Length: 490
Image 1 (tube, rainbow, N blue to C red):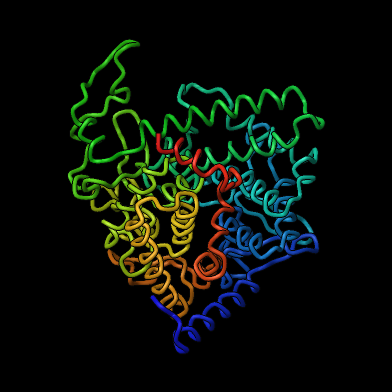
Image 2 (spheres, helix red, strand yellow; image 1 turned 45 degrees about the vertical axis):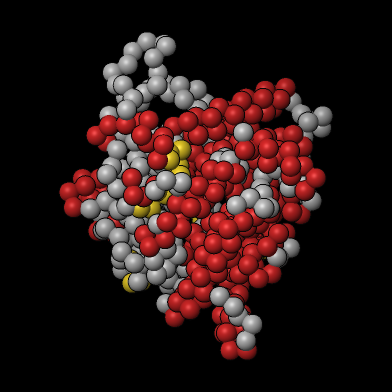
C-alpha cells in the first residue's frame, strides 16, 4: 500500500503520533523510576479491580523491545532489575519470575500464580527474562550488567529450575494448562509449542550471558550449567524439528507408521500416534509446500492446531531452518483468510467448538469458539510475524524472491488494515468472530501491547527494517551470511 500522497501520509502520521502519546501514558514508576507499562490504560482502580493496572512481564516484552529501539536503556535495565529482585527464592517456586507486579505503599507485590484465575503460575515470564536481558546487553553494550553477581545468580537459579531432572526423558519443559499466553483452559498442557520455543530462546540467551562471564568470577558450577544448557539447546531443537514440524510429506509418513511398538530399536512411532487422530482439514491447510510446528506432542495425542506466536518465535530465534521458514510463510499466505481475515492475526486455528469446547475449556464463556484464545484475533501478534519476515529477508537475501515480495505486500496490507481499524476500535485487546470483525466481548480497550505492537511494526516497516536483527540471538554478521545460509539449508 503506497502512502506517498499527502492524505494517506498525514493519516498515518496522525495515527502513529496518537499511538505514541497513548504509549507514554501507559508507563508507570516503581521505586521512583519508570519500570514499564501497565497492561491497559483503562482499568478499574479500586475494589475488586482487575489486574490490568499491574506490570506484566509477558505484556512488557514488546514494550521493552520498543524502548530498546528508542535507546531508552535505563527503563529496560530498571525493569530487568526489579523483575530479578522479585525472582522467587522459596523452596516450591525457586527460580520463577513473577507473572506481574505492582507497588502499593512503597511495597512491591508480585503474583507468582497465587492471585491469577485458576491459580496457575505462568511459565513464559520466567523464560522471557533472559531473552530480554540478552537483547538489552547487545543493544545497549552494557556488558557490566550481565557480569553482576545478581544477574549471574539469577540465571543459575532459573537454569536449576528448568533443567532439573524429572520423570520425563525428553528435553522439553512440561507445564500445566493456562501457563503461558494461553491463560485459560485450552487443552494445551504438556509441552505446548510456545513454551518449548521460548525455552529454546531462553537457554540460548542464558548461554550468551554466561559466556560473557567466563574467566571473570566464573565458578565451576556455572561452567557446568553452561555446558549442560548448550547440550539441552541442541537436543531440544532436534526434538522439536523431529516431532513438531509437519508438511504434507511428513503427515503422509506419520499416517502410515506402525503402532504398538516396543523395545529399543523400533521407535519410528515413539508416541504411538494413530492415523485416525490426523485431522481431515490438515490436507488442505498444508497444501503441497506449506509447513509449520504443531501445537503439542503428547503420547497418542498430537495437537495439530496452529499457534501464531510459537511459529513466529521459531523463526526469530533460529529454531527452524531458512527453507522451513519459507514453508511457514507459504502456509500463512495460503491460509490468510483463516489467520488474518479482517484483523491480523489469529492466535490459534482451528478453534475448539461444541462438545470439544465444553470438555476441554471447562465451558469457559470467555473462550467461546472464535473468541479470546480459542481462535480470537490478537493485533499484538502481527509484529512478531513481521519481524520474522524482515529478519529472513536480511539473513537470506535472494532466497525465493517472488515469495518474499509476496510476504512484503502481505505485511503492508496487514499494517494498513491495523492503521485503519485500531484507532477506530480504541486499540482493543482482541477481536472475535470467524473474520475477527468484532471487538472481543471482554476485551479491554487501549491495551498496551496492541498499541506498542503497532508501533513496532511501524518502526520495522517505515523507520529501520534492519532492527529486525535485534531478535536474532546470535549477532548478525554479513560476512558470515554465506556460511550460515549453507548450514541452515542442510
